[in-house]
Image (tube, rainbow, N blue to C red; front, side, top):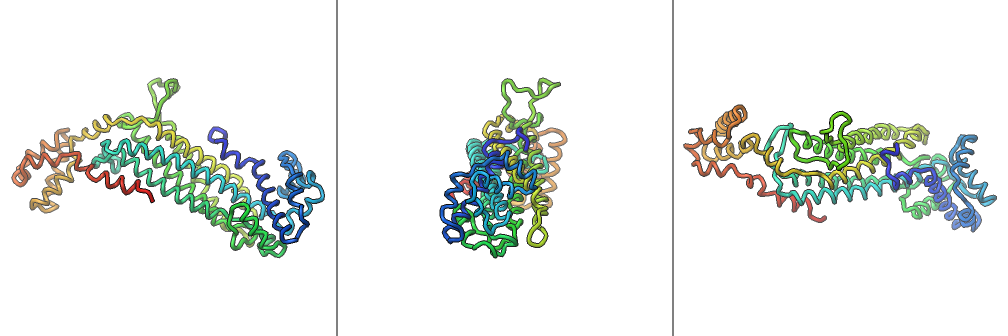
Length: 432
């Protein structure tokens, strides 16, 4: 991922230095286990730990010659450690190190993403509670439907990201496995107790059966979860973009005093951050198909998944980390305009009370079909003539003969649409 969309903490997880450090941790943990099992001499892991140094440049130099990254790494360690290094990697295969390391990196990245989601949830919750009763029009198919509140809008996203947090937690657990099973996963040359020790030391679970690699359905779930989170980000960003349109302008991204919106038009204030989030979501979702295709590998292993994961591992987690942090900032600093929301509510002259009138008519004896026809006729008249819906209803004798004028007027009440807001908030924000 390019630096523009990269934050330092998650970037460091995918740097070569951290990768090779994790490789060393895995090799040392395996050596400690082998010492306890009296497979290799005591003290090897301690001596290796004291002498080993991660020299990224040297590892890459060796790899350029031998064309094998794990061999290059082990050779580099041997150059620093000496003869004791010959006991490292005993009975193991490259995938034991590579797959366990990759899962550790995904786990570390996932934990950062969980923190990002927590911060986003806090931003959303604050806006939801602040605007719990801030009236705005609800839209279906982009058309005015019935009143809702801006707080409820926010609450839908709050619940969605709570679900995303659970999905991510589940996927982190799914990916947190360790395989130290040797060639084709039979443990022929490595004791299963070594794997158990390494898993415990690295706070991973043992992989029940690992051909020669950790099964890639685990990874497919992980990247699919990241894609779902990205889609939730895009849904939120799209809502902000629509609400910031000039003719709507119910919310607006924060615009700095020195910020400029267009090289040509000085008046412009564009929702560039939300548009950027929409683009990043597309990029994040693009990792899903390769991750799914990685599930089907040849026999006990091949490396067709390797190049894919070297790209989607860092790129997808880094991009999602950036997107979550950006969305949290957008929500926290969002300019919200309740007066414009109220103005937009009133531009259709009350026709969104049509269902209320419809239901009342059925209560006083009209069939649903009769009531619908009457209400629709007057609603369309209000729409076409830009006239008061209530005024048109009051001129409709078929209606006023059945329902008193005072009762009809009471139907046109915003509080009717907010009377159960508190119930929704209580069940959405209750602690579980």
